[in-house]
Image (tube, rainbow over all chains, first blue to last red; front, top):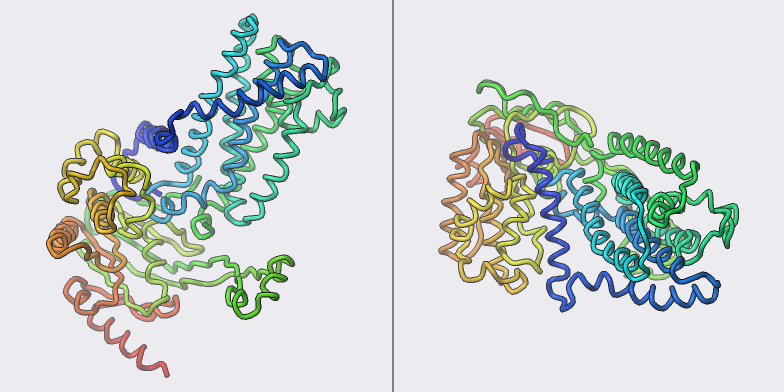
Length: 263
Length: 264
């Protein structure tokens, strides 16, 4: 929608500049006035891990050096997923001013939101590093597969934000639905519990394979924990990415021109 | 996302800047009955909980066609709610036509809602960068423009302070200076901008005149007939979303007057 200057030589890099700067800037503004600054992003999870982590490890009879890393990676990964999903439904209504001024395209608005979620997430990676250092866990090159999982998560964040952004702009109910689902999804995903040796035990039993968050988390977490990834997880993650992207593309092709009317 | 307006290749002049053919705009709406909230609170609540909000489609613009040739200045005339602002937003590429075609040759910039979208927690300087990036400028280009913007807005002393310490006038000045830092081929105006104290108003007028001089076309929506006469060459009369006249300005003003008087 940038119908203004130099449309013909609107370099990709210029757009990147816009995305990165605006998302980083919004982040900086938010924490500038606080004393701890972005360190606040770590306070909540640290408390949670220190208290709930040790408690649950004792209750469940799981060694801390297994449960605490499991919990930490789970929480940090969940923060990314939750950021993408929860913010997606309001992405366009929050950017109403930018949309109505005609400066930023809907793609720009989506990318800025996705990037700011990634910025928040990037800060929390420190927690994983700290836990690995504290428990002196060894990491093999296999752990790098986790980055592939992360890439999948981000790709899904993009289509999700487009898809639910459009849906949420039209039907405000979607925000409520998503909130209700995410609360249950947190408990249904093995973050504060361990599914057991078989991979589908634990509280949720066989239903676990139907939880998409579980498969995404597995691909990010298993490599770091030195565990194998089930073929099913790859299949689910890749299918969701492909099908979701297709859906989002169709959806935006069909509806993006009416979004400015809905916000 | 397919969100750019249809755009022909840039070629030499005789091509029209804007070519609008039979565009319509239908908008989905919620008919929330706010009045019930006051007159019949019980009913308002039951409607809310029983999801009785009516959804419908409203036609805001219907079959509008015109052409803006280089040098043309088009005035859009119409009563409140006739669809003037919506038409401008459509020309700016914000709203996409539900049907019909809109071809734009050149760069378009609309000056609407210029004070919106500023971050009150950020400093004036940071807001200049934010808005600049949103307008599609690069960091380097903005950096070069900053001194000019700061000088024009007369905010040299306050530019490093957060915007929430600014007075209303200061915010308007900054918003105006930022919004006019680039000069488009086609300028879209929803009411003429005249703002600030007497001294600043003169500068605004000078800046607006220079924007006009450097643009190749103008579309202006205003209720101010003398202003329109002094600026525009053509007129387009809207009534309830329908185009009832398009042609020379004088004839358009007559047509509008007749239309108003024709109504009981």
